[in-house]
Image 1: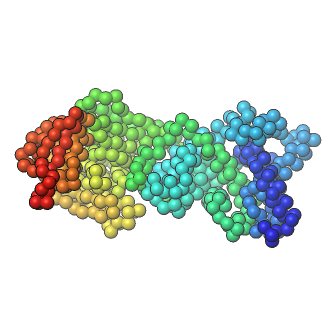
Image 2 (image 1 turned 90 degrees about the horizontal axis):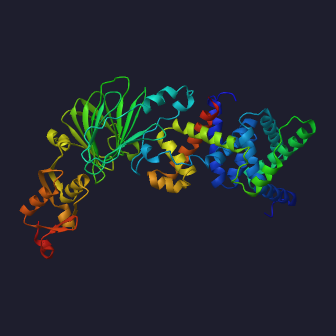
Length: 178
Length: 350
C-alpha cells in the first residue's frame, strides 16, 4: 500500500468501485456484443491501447476490475459518440438501472441473448469428453469448489483445474466455430 | 466470427488459465497477466470472452437435465479422455450421430418384477438403463449387441459411428458384442476399460470395490484406468474361459473360471465359491427387496462358504446356514439376521 502512489491508489479504488457498480452491466454488454459486432472489436482495440499505457503492472491490484474499468470508460465514450452520430446501438437506460440494482435480473431485451448463449454452451458441452463435461457442470451449475469436485471424482485439485481450463477453451472453440 | 484455428484455441486456453490464476494468484500472477494481456488485442478479447462465457455458464441447465452420473458415475468411476486432437479438429456435423445415439432403443425382455423402470435418455446422448431389486432385463442395442442386465444394476450406453461406449455403473451385466471391426465395443467400469470385438463376456462390480471380468466367448482386452497407476498399465488379454479380478489399487489377478458360475445369474441362480457370508448376503439382497439378510459380527461376516442357491429364495440360504452349527438365524420383521451362535466363545472358533 505505502509503495503505491496516491494517484494509483485513487485510480485502483475508483476502478474497484466502478467494477462493483457496473461490472454486471458490462458483462452483459460484452455478452451481447462481443461475439458479433464490429463495435465490440473497436471497443477491444481501444481498451487494449489504453492498457498498454499502464507502465507498472505490479501496481494494478485487481487486473480484472482494471480491465472492466477501462472498458467501461471506452464503452461510455463510444456510446456518447454514437448518440451524437446516431449510428451506435445504445443501452436502454431503464434496463441498465435495473441491472445495476439487481445484477441477476436481465432485461426482457437481453434475456433471449442470454438464453441463446446458455443454449450454445449446453450444446458445446455435449461434445466434450464426459469427464470435462462433468467437471464443468459440477462447478458451474452445481457450484462445487475445485476441492469438492476433486474429492467427489477422486482427482487432484490440479487435475480439476486443468480440465476446467480445457473445457472452457473447448466450449469457446465450439461456441463460435460453427 | 472467423473459425478458430490452433492459435485461437491456444489463446482461449491461456485466457481460461489466467482467469483461474487471477482468482488464486498473488502479485506475480497479476503482473504476468497484465503482461500477457498487453501482448495482443486478441488476448484481451479472448479474456473478455471467457469472462462472458463464465457469466453465462452460471445459469446453464436450469432444469438439471445434464446427467453428471452417466459420464462419471461414482467417485471411482473415472472415464477415459480423448485429448486435444479432437479439440483441434473442426466440430463438423455430429448432428447425424446424435440421431443414431438417440435411436439406441431397447427391447425389454425379462422383467421379473414389473416395475415401471425404463431407460432414460440423458441430455448428452447417454442412455441409461436400470434394473430394480429382483429385476433382470435384456437389452438389444441397435448394432445387434445384447446386454443382459442383472438385478439392481445400472448401465449407460452411447453408440455412434465411431465407437460403442458402455459404462457399467452398478451391479453386473453380460455383454454379447456384435462383430463390427470399425467400431470398438468398449465397456468402462470405474477401474478398467474392457474392449471386445465379437465376443461374450461378463462384468461384475463387487461390493468390496473390485471388478471381475469373465470371458465366455472370443477375447477381450482389459486395461486398468491410468489414474490407478496399476502395475499392469498395458492391461491383459483374456481368452474364453478366463477371468480377471481388478482391485481398487489396479492390481489384476487371473482366476480360474467356472463358466457356469459366470453366467448362472441369468437363471437366477447364485453360485458362490468360498465367498464371505457378508458378500453372499449382499448378493441375495441385490435380488430381494424383502426379506433383507443382515449378518452381524465381523467373524460371521468374514466366514467363507460355497454353494448354489436360488436367488429368489433367501430361505434357501437360511436352510444352508442352519446346517452350519456355528450360526444362528433370527427372523425380525422383514429381516433375516445371521450371527454366530454363541458370541461368548468366539475365541475358540477357527
